[in-house]
Length: 281
Image 1 (cartoon, rainbow, N blue to C red):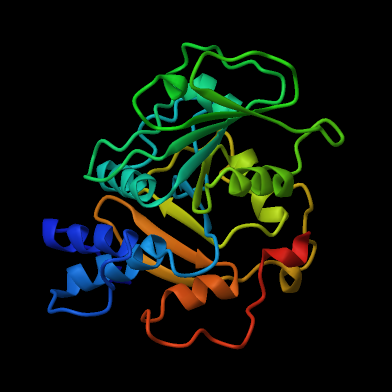
Image 2: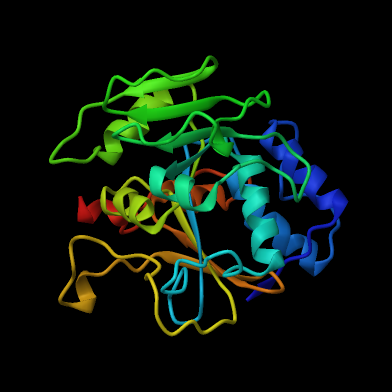
């Protein structure tokens, strides 16, 4: 397991990688700083194909909330800081309308330096109120993906997509967002939204932050619609493990692009393909 120490110097380097002005492979660093560069460097790169990363925080027993819906402290303080760093490294953050309504999500960067990402809410029926925190004007782009003709307040971009069997196809959402100029995306929640992108084979990386907490009952972290009866048919991603302090992070590569991003910028990309979630689509 790699230890992670995010100093000001190492985070400045990561942001420089994001802007295309530096690499994450050079310099003299402590072991913890090297771990931080190994974790965040691949996420900051913009020299590869578009990246889609999902992140979910859960308990040791795979729960994301209690039976009453209390999910506020599932992730520890270091897990929460990690989530804010992810936001700072992507073009846009995607959540489902259920998460937006239940958590009053702001989706801003507050626990580290870096730009606020565009905020995207998947809201097929137009349920999200215009005064929701995710739609507040603060200079960042705000987008709503919906199927209905519901007007939005000034400054909020609306992407109209058709429903297929009552839901949006994740591939249609991704294509529309990329056409709008958002190529690097974080699928932040909830579990149903993440599982949809996973089953469609659209995730470059999946990050699971596990907190030392036993909930015992409540909603599960990830539940796909297509169950596997044999372990041989399950996804076995290329996985790196990082110690964040209060949480342990499993960083799962789901595509050849994920492996390529962990190589030095000047190194050639691998020619072999890894088994990915695309086998589920």
